[in-house]
Image 1 (cartoon, rainbow, N blue to C red):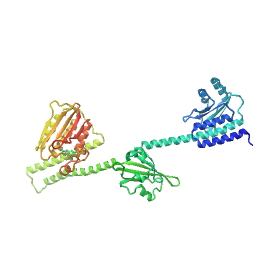
Image 2: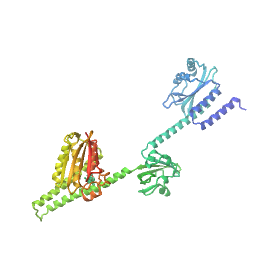
Image 3: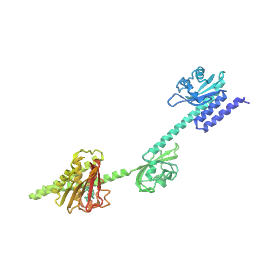
Image 4: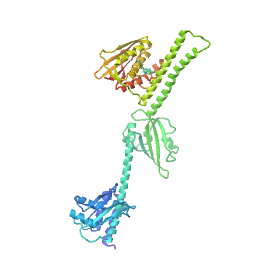
Length: 516
Ligand code: ADP
């Protein structure tokens, strides 16, 4: 038979062993270990201090010490070297320290013992037991305390590992929640285990309506541009290696919204034995790439058409004029040169517009502002057109006290030039082109109207877009669809707005406002 206290010691050790595997709350565990140690060593009080992450010692739990007196123990803790290596670790002469401390705190402890908590050759904390009677702690007492200290060290490391894992998980959650791309985590059966807010947003449904659904239920394609979808790739044995990511691009069907162009990258997570555990799907909205692609395509077609026509005309006229076998009278030569000049001007204008559009895109279109009487600018532009377009009548209609504004004269002249040139171009039968100015409390409004066929309501939302040309316009007239785009940019850079009057009496009427 074991002596009674050895039986209790064994039972306590067993109980603590069990608690360590079941309880992850470190404070509760340490309190339990300390209570048992105090009891087994017939002490009155005790404490466990742990090494802080940045070094130093903090009391993790105490027994039999009134909380108010805990700070009296600080000097004791400060004497202990901040040392992780057990070989160099030393608990200073406890008893003389204890005397100092307990005298001040009038706790009456007379004897004490302390041991380091060592786990995998690192000091993770300390345990102290105090008695209020003198009588040395025996070798047996120390051995007993050592076994509890070892248990406590395991508990501390477990808890630290657990906290570390929890921190990792929090990091991962933050990463998922803050990612701009949609992210889905699928299990080995392709069920959606997790979904981040960005995906829910993109798909137009709350996260709760997405998780736990099969992948094929949520990711449905109205059009696929890649060779294989996830399901098709899996049917062919994907993934064979952990690095075999799969990319699928196409239009994603959405419950209450229009299909969205997306690119999805699927990355498999395999066990070392090669079994699939998870698939991480990153879903990227590629609307902008598509738009950029579309713009590039339009750009190339517009440019090839718009550049080729004048060049072909110039070449044609020059070729004719240079023929050795013919002599041209003066009028023919003059007319041909006029065409050449006109086409060269058109080319210059187009190139300048393109350059401006590029500057706009790169954010380097800058304004050169000064005091500006815009009614004079309008008159000057109108005068230029009077010569070029004798079939039209140009009227400038500004009140006499029209205010001076701050603006970039060249840029605003360009806006007026674009609007007037559209007025002329889109009313081929002539008529009146009127520029009116109105004064409002905080801004001025300038409108340019013509008497042509006007702008179809369906085109109104798009005419300020880059390269946009109404189909009727592109059949009958020349142009790159850049004039209004650039005009809008200039007006907005001035802090103003440009719009189409939806219901003019006749023809088209485009207005813009500028702050006073
Ligand atoms: P472009 O004239 O080179 O086509 P703009 O950006 O100046 O480019 O104009 C865009 C489109 O807006 C034109 O193609 C035309 O369809 C329409 N539009 C602009 N001004 C008028 C107008 N005064 N009357 C009718 N349609 C117009």
